[in-house]
Image (cartoon, rainbow, N blue to C red; front, side, top):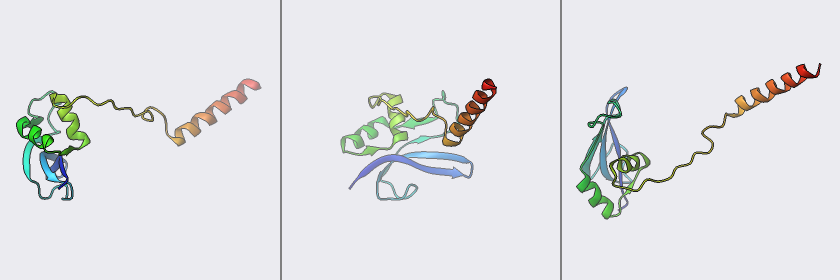
Length: 117
């Protein structure tokens, strides 16, 4: 059975609240899970200690059993010091999109024309 430690969404519309759960990877996001390991409330301030709560003993147990973690839960575990920090590189994040590049090229061409005359 392929196990994952992931988030299960709860709460009403526009008021999310997540449970950190150990679940079979084939089950739906909010569906059946094996064990609840903690909670995550994104509406709280980032420095609030109640924002992310986890039972680290159980999380370490499931990691020892071979459970894979999702990206968001991996970030929580890195912040808690349970996992080594992974280098992330999004090289395209700072580059403008195609339309913005076209506008910049047109503006540069127009400026070059103005300086020629």
